[in-house]
Structure formats: structure tokens, C-alpha cells
Image (cartoon, rainbow, N blue to C red; front, side, top):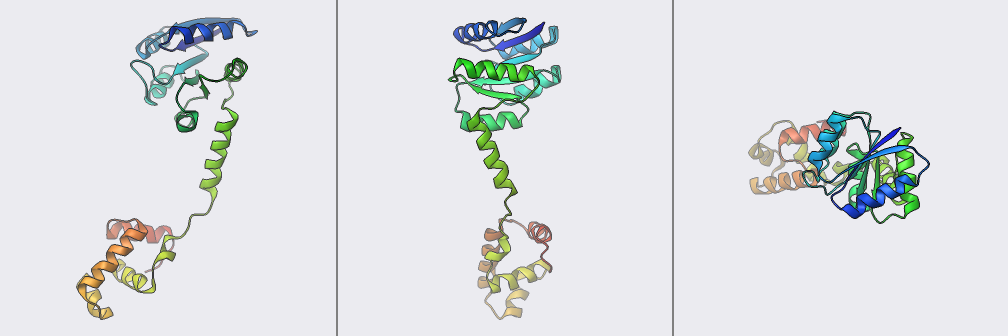
Length: 212
């Protein structure tokens, strides 16, 4: 017998989900609660195959709910069920450990599909979320631009001297520049490379295989 826990603070939502599940060809026991504290209590009392969890739940409403749930029952499948904008929240919750994300605006057939997918111990996401996930992966795979290519010849000279631990006044003497000019170059270098200290600069140079 499949055991399903529904956690939502709106009675109409709990009722609707119960009706949808009862129409599935799955023998299931359904427990419904309306606060996250009740979720924790129920997880301590019995094993569940599936938790349908509202994001904005009294006593919860954050991704930390997933940590608590998975600590209580590591094998439970969790379907986030929310009225929040799917584009804004779905990927974050899936990355945080949810097994599926479903909008409350989804049609009944999609809701059935999501529930059945998780009960097969498979991940579920809508087509739009899947596309967002693919776009994110492809973006991460694209080679990142080398930030050192944005530095001018003079900025590179100043950077190399800074990386050797040479003080600004000595750099000014070596390059025949005013101290204030060297300070300006240093500020530009740090801004372009998004670093705050010489240690950060050295680490960034090492990451990009820039020799001193």
C-alpha cells in the first residue's frame, strides 16, 4: 500500500489532491496536514513513499524544510507544490533536494503525471523547468571569458609588479609614473578582475595560469 503525505494549509488544495490521488489506479493511504510542524511529527510516526509539500507552509516556507524531511526519511520522494512562479523557484528547490516541482496552476493530468512519476522513484519537472535547467547547464559549460584580457598593457605591467609584492611607490619609480596614477591603475585592475586583495589577485592569476 502506497503511503502519501499532503502538506498544505488550504483545505481546498488538500481536498483536490486527495480526489486526484483517489482517481489514480494506485491503492494508497493519504494523510493530510496543514503545518510543517505536523509534517515533522508524521514523519516521526510512520514511513511515507511521497510527500506533497507546499512551499509556503506555516512553520516552514524555506528550502531548509527539505533538509529536515530528508533527515527524517532519506528515501521519501518530495514533490514541491506551489503557487509561486515556477521560473523563479523550481530549479532552486530541485537543486536543494526536491524530487519534483509542480505549479498549483497545473492541469489535473499533469498533476497525476507528477505524482505517478515520483512514485516510480523518478524526478519530475515541467517542460518549461526542464528547458530552464538545460539552459543553465549549457551556460555553465560555455568557456568563461579570461578577465585578464580586459587589462591594458600598462595595467598588466602594474599587476605583475603588484603580484611580486612591490610597493606602490616603488612601482611608480620603476614605471616613471606618479604614485596617484599607480593607485588608479591598481583600483582599475582590482575592479576588472573582481578582486579585493593581493592574495585574491594571486589566486586569480593562478586559476587562469598567469605567470608573474
